[in-house]
Length: 470
Ligand code: URP
Ligand code: ZN
Ligand code: ZN
Image (cartoon, rainbow, N blue to C red; front, side, top):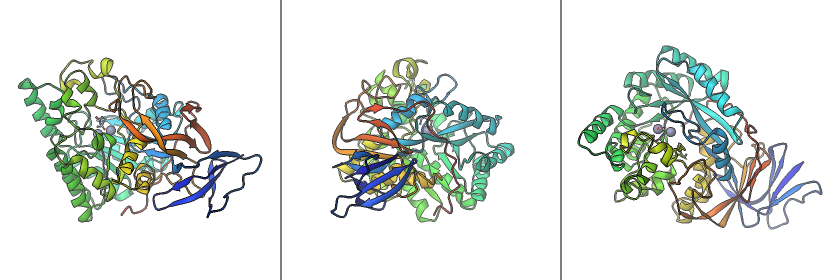
């Protein structure tokens, strides 16, 4: 059976065209420009999707999500099923989550556990990065073996969270040397965790426990310092591909920019929350609402330059990718379960459903072009993480396609979203544009809000180590 998506505006990262898209066997068979004519003449057995006045874009790739993440005291509230349904509703057709090895733990076992959790549940295609929470000789050998064994082309390291997932500079260097040798991408949570822990301890001792102190004890300068250090270590390691996750501040962005200029093999992502939310209107609300915005890196002050600089960074390709860092915890049952002190609140914000819409607002306001929107939400994450068949409307690529209606309007509310989350960080946001139809490998899985995807239909994506990245 063929499907023809007719009359739409096809948007790729490098061009837009008036074209019809022919899909068969889960792949894109042809992209045919209409050139003022009628376009593809559909056969009687073809399914036709009319995309008149709509944008036809590659399905989104969210390279940073945490479904059912076990923090030790609770588990993030979206399962791989509910979270992937929410992703699909928002036009994201591939998610990359994490397998997490902790100090003394076995990398391969952690991968197998996580794979088993996701496999039977995901409704969109998915993959896993490998967290190394305890870098040692064995974990590096095992992580390296995952390239061939499981098609895992990225690891994740933490410069924050001492005593849990933290790597010191020596561990960072050894892991980056492995990445330099293999080409694996090193994702790094860049914050100076040791210094932050001192500030947290001092804030608590002074009785400063309100949500805003979460941000105030994680100042932007300690994010920037860690970005700088990671970049230096990547160079010392011989050019390890480095990807800074959740860049939240002007200060950190400046370090990314400087490192890119001096030839460091560095890339960076930001997230919708750092482009749209600020400390005062979120954490500043106090308890209980403020707890809903506790995430790391934290939301930054409104009066500073972060929003403007991050949008500029996206436009200018200093920031390559927008991911969500989707890590939802219900407000009443989870965020506040350990009491009203910012250091006891599980960290994370849910947002996998609204990434495309929230970043599309940058197109509406002129911050970025349509092409750049597609690039940061789909094409660049595919390329950087070795998803060869994703992120492009082109012949031979997977038919992961979103029909996006720029004239629609989306109002975000916990009452209507699909995430398993009892609040929304974006409650009441009225957004221009909206997802109409979502296709995953040729199957329509969402149409006008109706989901028709079964648990486990999503395919595990083996990923390639990308060729020289810069
Ligand atoms: O607050 C966040 N981002 N929680 C998820 C874990 C992480 O650091 O990415
Ligand atoms: Zn992080
Ligand atoms: Zn994260």
